[in-house]
Image: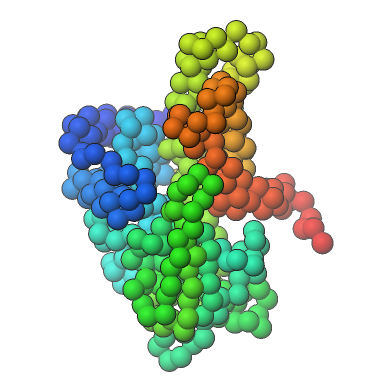
Length: 377
């Protein structure tokens, strides 16, 4: 498989670099991590700048390779991450682009691209654990609406979201993977209660969401009724396939910074630490090549990432945790200081083997869909 870039792709990279060099100095100061209304406004403002410059649609209108270049260059330049736009740009938006009707694409995609609306993800439930298909939030059909009752947890950015990509059970008697439906839920609908959750790192970008007889128009259904599991697999393929690309670039930068810090504080003299840093450098280089391979495979199959994203997500989650464990080793006692670089990143890295599907789930996908091993009983 050819992992090189075409002249046209390199031209796109050069134009993007030039624009970033001019645009980034004009940004306002970043708001406090706890100021979610401020962070929403900041993230939407950045998205609007991308829209005005013609880069907003790269997440679903451009080829997977151009998407990869965009994420690589914006991370290298220190541009704002998608932030509160994460679900809309990297999950819900690509799913609607791939599975929605023409009317749905016209209704929901432009506001995401223009930086006007924020989406959240209503997949996980309190009693489901990593078994997403065991969700119990019910949606009862009543004419042209669904009446939804249940609760969600770890709902990303729910406290500032306008819409939610919501999984509901529409047929409780069907096999559990076949009775699920994917809905677009307006977060200002009656009957919704949002309770923010504070994480180990002290942030509150997740929330519990309680749904009490919430009415959602049938027109907000993406895909057919009871076909939501298949639509969800499209969503998760984007989440596992390309959503972490920028973070791989960031991890490679952190690795270089760790080596510099170790030279400054004398820990570079430890040959075990040097070998560990060298092995991790090779690992993140390999992950970058795997990302390129997955993107090339997606390009050949119509733009939707395949199960190779599970291989990437599985290995990346553990590599990220090891990276920040190594950071603690380099910092020594300073790693307990929450104001030091990398300390909060180490705490947040603990969630990566759970988020976007646990490592156990990813191993099952790799075993069954790639290696062809029999399903466990």
